Structure formats: structure tokens, C-alpha cells
Length: 206
Ligand code: SF4
Ligand code: URA
Image 1 (tube, rainbow, N blue to C red):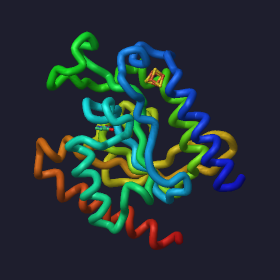
Image 2 (spheres, rainbow, N blue to C red; image 1 turned 60 degrees about the horizontal axis):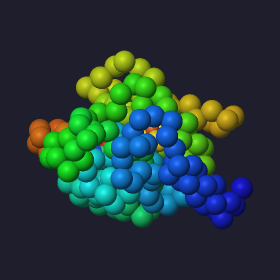
Image 3 (cartoon, protein in one colour; image 1 turned 120 degrees about the vertical axis):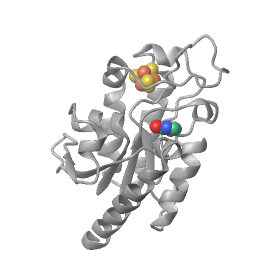
């Protein structure tokens, strides 16, 4: 495994996602948001799915929630170029797919869509092999940990993600989704606690 071979495999995976029609979202979206950042990142941040802006730009977390995520990263000295950022589904889920321009048209991915897209995220994780995963919000946390527990229960503690392929489990920290912070300021404290926790873990093991 070299950095170049990992990059090449990520590129080919991205091409597969671009051609993917495994679920209905594939023919509704403008652009998939495959992932962004460093293929040798220590930390992988995983959100829910692309929204309006992400669908246009083909990159995760570039809208309002993304700007807040950039600030959260900066608070512990990280940048979107040095971590890796992806979503549990690569194509934008819409409430009304016939009207992509409509405001408030985003929705969470369905269980079928999550299942259909899962292989891409798992392949991405096995390629990047991050030391830590941060699940942003309940949908990402539940999907990755295969649990029905909600974000209130899961956040603030380390869990383990099993990447398969004979690789060791990866410590996974669930925290609130940045979009949730835009609605409820009270959760900012908790996210700050979680980011300090992440930073400490990164320093301990490097
Ligand atoms: Fe394929 Fe995932 Fe897009 Fe569905 S959301 S079409 S599974 S890439
Ligand atoms: N919300 C997400 O979960 N992911 C994005 O990429 C953008 C907003």
C-alpha cells in the first residue's frame, strides 16, 4: 500500500459512485458528494448526506452546516484539507425530487438508501484507515454502529467501528450534527467537549 495506490483506489471508487444507480437517489441528484480531504487523514468525519449546496458543488459540507463544521475543526487546529469528510449517503435525498430548487427540500436518507450506499463508505474507510472516526449526528452514528440508540445516548463516549477486511476496530466518537447546533445553541458546549476529547486522543496516540 502506497499513498499513490490509495489515491488511485479512492479515485476509482469515486468513479463508481458517479455511475451508481443502486438506489433512486442516483438519478435524482445533480452531483454525488463522494468525500473530501486527505487520503491519509488521522480523523474521518462522517455526516448524513448531501443537501442543496453539496448537490451543486459535489462536495460534502459546503453549505451552512459545512461552514460551522470548518469552525469546529479550526477550534482544535484541524482543516478540511487535513482530515477526511464524507457522508453515509453520497447522493442528496429530497422530499420532492421533482423540485430540486425548492428550499427546505432536504430529508434524511431512508434505511434502504443507507443500506445501498453503505459499501462505498466502508470501502472509503478501509482505504483511508483513519485512527479516529467522528460521527456527526444521529443518522451517521446509528448507521455506523448498527444501533437503534439515539444521539443523546451515544454522544460523548468512544465506541468502536468494525471496518472489516481484517482491520482493527476504529474508535468512533458520536457528536451532534453541525446543523443541529444551528438550531440549538445549547449543544455547542457538548460538541466543544467532544472536540477536546478527540484532540486529547490524537495527542495520546501519535
Ligand atoms: Fe448509489 Fe449511494 Fe447514490 Fe444511492 S446514494 S445512488 S447507493 S451512490
Ligand atoms: N449535512 C450533512 O450531513 N452532510 C453534508 O454534506 C451537508 C450537510
